[in-house]
Amino acid sequence: MAVFTAAEKRSTPESNFPAQRGEFEFNNNHAFHDLRTVRVTPGGVPLLFSPSVCEKATIVSFHQTTIQSPAEAMPLQPVVRHLSIREAPAKSNFDQALEGLTLDDVSSTSALVSCQHAFSGTHTTPLVVPIYHSSTYIMDRLEDGTPAIIDGSSVYSRLGNPTCEMTEAAINAVERGAGSLTFASGMAAVTSVFLGFLNTGDHVSHLKKPIPMLQLLWLETPCNPNILIVDVQAVLDLVKDRDILVGVDSTFASPHCQQMMKLGVDFCMHSCSKYIGGHSDLIGGCVTTRTVEQWRILKHVQGTFGNMLSPHDASLLLRGLRTLPLRMKRHSETALEVARYLDQHPKSPHDASLLLRGLRTLPLRMKRHSETALEVARYLDQHPKVERVNYPGLESHPQHEIAKRQMTGGYSGMIMAEIKGGSKGGETVAENVRIFRMAVSLGGVQSILEHPYTMTHGKYLLSEEETKNSGVTPGMLRISIGLEDAADLIADFKQALEKVEL
Ligand SMILES: Cc1ncc(COP(=O)(O)O)c(C=O)c1O
Image: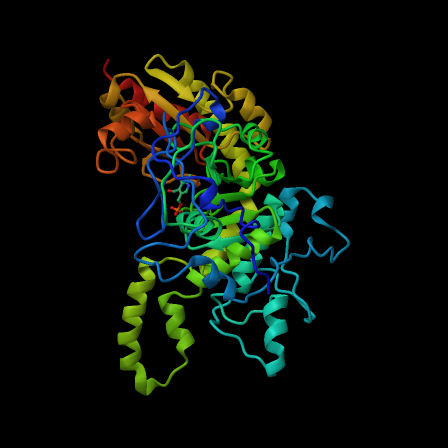
């Protein structure tokens, strides 16, 4: 059972770095333009706040301490260390070269579409990964327990579920890290990284150039909602001789459009509720790590806190109960409670199987999203009622050259367009489109758009000051291009823009 030293977790001893408070002062380097604001609650649980596009960002620096009130009696690391669970990420047929093929022999598209769980000991393998509902697994002999845990056999579904593991192997086949993990949501994924790799609880600190006490850089690119690009390579170059972890939220691009692990980041995270799921019917998240040790730490966090994509939904639970008809009344009452609980926590092997289905078509969808988005962005860019358009594939995008280098699989489907006429202009277009639907989220097969100034970055979420700092302007629209024909989407914008009065 591995024990992770402070050095392995890249912790910073408090005594060397007294805490500071304040705000990070940006230099003009675009690399740091889009850091998310990160804070720590008094209970020690880190949270992400506010939009990522800030003129100023507050960045955490955590110290080598235990969690403070109200969880001060529970130092994080020992709890995580004591949980013994499997020691290595799940493997697919390509990882194990079962047919003589490795991931290096096939394109990431082929790997995604055809990777299979490396099941052993059976004569046949199901083509579609079954949904494993079992919460626990039978052992024949007592001595099988420890090897089962270590070799990755399922023991208890909080610690590992074959459906989730196959999904993780498929994600890793395209991300190409040491291993991946799936979570109940994107936010569960990111908070797990914080819980595993930061010693929480003491300070929200700031960074003064040249970042004297930074523990973790958490980047997002393309970032929400401005669709600006962080030059990840430049960030890595800047911190390369320093003991700093770098994580990237790559949700807006999907693993098809950019593979951050190849650049050498420590973590690549996605909200799978977006492109990877792709059908707007699941909530999930994933993280890929650079090293197996990091994967293990994250796996231990997940096993301890139970925020995995887990077995259960109400009807399947009812079926799984296998109980006597005489107890039906009792079952019904219990099931209602469980169903209500599960309804608030939409996470299950069923979601994992949807996720895997989404992964199979991801390359095709991303190609189409990227091509259509470029056409729509070009149209909007020349329209007299549009103030400006940010789409990484447009030459006019301020970081087009970085995007060209970084987004090798396409520029994805996210466009920011600022409509003339301020909030009224943005609202008019948002309310008059007919094929686009007005909705938050992104990355689905249907085209949707939202008006950040009144919706995701509106008054109910951010203070006036925060809205100002976020770079969100009243006329801005965040557009997620779906799979419809570009000509229809352009015609939709044309008629909606005609209604804008200047
Ligand atoms: C870029 C980005 N990261 C993370 C998240 C959080 O993901 P989820 O909603 O799956 O928790 C979202 C979605 O709101 C997002 O857009």
